[in-house]
Image (tube, rainbow, N blue to C red; front, side, top):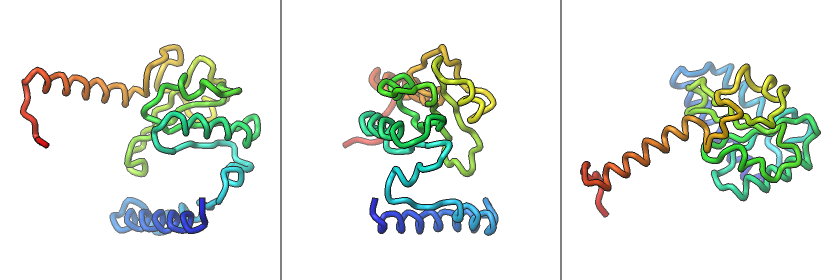
Length: 178
């Protein structure tokens, strides 16, 4: 990551915080505090040095996520919790190459995260209890259920599939043609 990209990201963050201040979502003091808590780093190693929690929020493509988790395992201390924000992939797919899947969870926040105080926590049978205790009081899914996606995404997928089938049966009108 270049210093120019980091500077642009910081400006965007500051702009977003000021927009929230302008709409009364947060105070100006809280915006300053939030911005002060962000320290851009040019390398992944520098970004995760000394952390107790590493949260991944990269685009929803499996291979880059798996590569990032493998790299994270080499960079962070043994007790560091690795978290994905995915709404797409099952936890078993994300942990397939990890040496220590017991310290991995999904914590899927709902957008806009600063306004919707809801985070879906997804664990699995291998997830260590201290990891769960450090992240949430209780997971939103039964670790033994092995669901194909976080609950919110799974129910959305069902709605989408049924809508497509409804249209395919000629029971609806297409809003757009092209």
